[in-house]
Amino acid sequence: MKKASIFFITTAAVLITGCGKYLEKEPDNRAKLTDPKKVSQLLASAYPLANYMAFTEAMSDNADDKGQGQVEPTNQSPYLFENVQTTDQDSPDNYWNECYKAIAAANEGLAACDKAANPDEYKKQRGEALIARAYAHYMLVTLYAKPYDVATAGTNPGVPYVTEPETVVIKQYERHTVAYVYDMIEKDLLAGLPLIDDAAYDKVKYHFNRSASNAFAARFYLSKRDYAKVVQYATASVPNFLPNLRPWNTTYQTYGINNLPAQYQRTSEAANLLLVSCPTLYNYGLSYVVYRYALSNDKMDEILDNSISVTGGSWSFILGYVGSQSNPAIPKLNYTDFVYETPTSNFGVGYGVISLFTTEEVLFNKAEANTYLGNYDAAINDLNIYMSTRITGATPGALAPARQITEAKVLAHYNGTLPIKEALVAYILELKRAEYIHEGMRWFDMLRYNIPVKHDINNGGTTGTSITIDANDKRRQLKLPDGVKLSGITDLNR
Image (cartoon, rainbow, N blue to C red; front, side, top):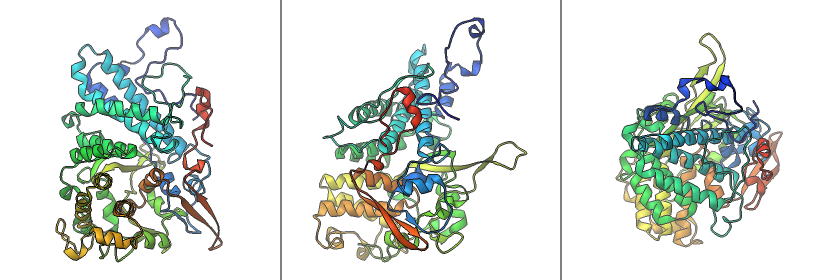
């Protein structure tokens, strides 16, 4: 269904279009946010109920043209850096709309907090709404605008930062600048953080809890290159990494290919800091494996090199194949969630639970920040903790000396061509690339570091042509949906 405004009006919003006795009646008491509990219920919708992995993974250098496999616009068009001609789930347009739906819910919640006679009783809800609003805007500005750079952020166009409920059919907006959007994100983030209280949630990991909120702050300040704050918030998010990392070389080895995906996204998994359940075909039926433009055997060998670079040893990630030997995978995204249209129907919508923030990301962000601060020992110590849970046969927390990362080994890995700071950052990005195969996270690092990407096009079993997207290519930024032109925005990036 086409939408006229920049985002959808939530069920709690009241649209005033005229006058008359009909409008003098209360249409639905459920629309009134009369107590903190009802505001909390509304804020369950303040998270983008959409999956970005299909297009971010396809745009990254994790994807390859396998020459065969399932072809979907949300997978093929991003790989070819073409505009995705659909608004269905897993598409960029759908993600844009779902982000602004989430922002609308957050704004309705904040309006209710402002109108309350007893605002002190709404502090927890205000905190969640502010951080949720900041997060959705952060994801939008990351995907639809150029990366933050202090030299250009004041002139590069960002995205509309919406801070109040939409009460007209077509409201006019402007994109503002990247700097403006970042300033507003920071304002909301810092105002919301002190108000977050985990006791306010029945299902803590489906809300911006303390750990997830601080993880978001660490990611935000890494994008802004404020490295001292990255360390500050990463430490607040996960004070002790070892017991909170995914147990790949211990417990996970007992699950096997079929049982691992269910565990990977569970709330009981300590590594999952924030989860969301959303409509997606990317997870369902292992589509992310059988898509044509996805992880290939060549890419798997490139990313998961055994013996592992710098440390030696073998990765403990569980690898398998789906359908044929051309579809390698780490089966970690749950693929059986499905909601039927009605209790008696045989059709419906595939769902997936995805983790928006994890302990592993917090560790990588902290290590990267410490590297830029010159705290190499601290960065390497955290990386060794991580590797002790990833190398087959290693004892978590007690990596053997022969397997430990050292400055000398990292320098040798790059043949002495890079100074230690650049070499260590490059190595962190290598590890992070391996950790998040299939999950789309690699693209965000490629954006931050302006890493070019080359995609080969397979014609009849042989590589025919290729597409190279360099740092200045406009196709790195997603195209804004055509519908935003009704709201006064004419620069759609492409």
